[in-house]
Length: 348
Image 1: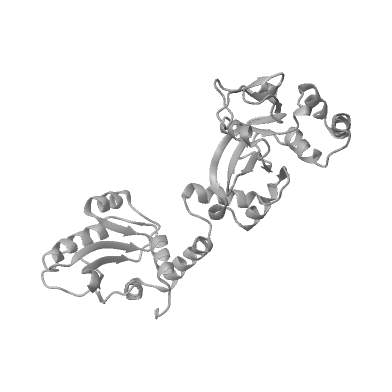
Image 2: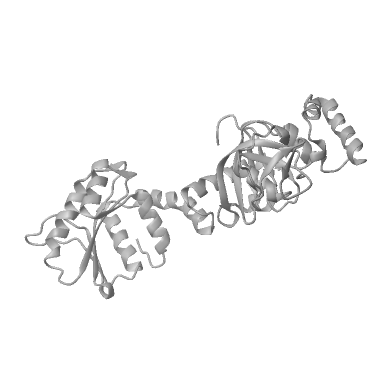
């Protein structure tokens, strides 16, 4: 989350959705209370302290003859929301994240773009200080708007909102301070940008993958790592998995040959117990071995892999892998493969 961000808000714009959605698409988050839309009144309540709150309540009594419980939502929108704050805007089954570019202004001060239209296609303009569409004889009940920029929109609640964020979006209040859900919002945004939905699998994988890799590094020397790869392929249903053996006249090297008979497929693997960066040497070995085996494997297709417990592969290795058609699997990637395959039957 950006430095200096102090508050996160939830704000609904279902009220006057015919115009509030197009406004948001054009960078303005809105609220109702058209009867209170006034720069003079806005300045009075922003004085601060008890005076501002008291002036707001007086205005409510003056206009509506009672003090609405919704005044808290009005106050949050017109006084509390500040430039740099993030605002979550729920939609039907989704939500958006926006950053406030300033504080609320009366709708009369919105610089509407030329040709602005309501959702039904009707031209809409500011007349007598309020928004009005050509197809209606009365203005929309929107009194204030906050200029915003979109951070992310159309985020699926189902896929990216955790339990706490999902629960708060079911609350029917117009707006709420949800700064205490900062981590939930950050997690949702990160997952959405990475295209990794928040579900049990993803959550477990995120927590378990580094644990699996650390355990591999702790207990598996090079030979034992080859055995682990062998058992991985056996768990996948390989018809045979052969560890490296000396072959007269062979070129290159492969530590594992996993055959899937029904697919007529053989996966040749070079296994490296490395930390840090794995260079292109393993790649050259498996590439040469694949060329050597191609004339011996008959009607079997072959695939070449390099599995390393490394953090990453060198730039040269990545470039050559693309050229040679070799799949590179680093430590985190191998940990995910083991997690997906399951550990039942593993004896190493």
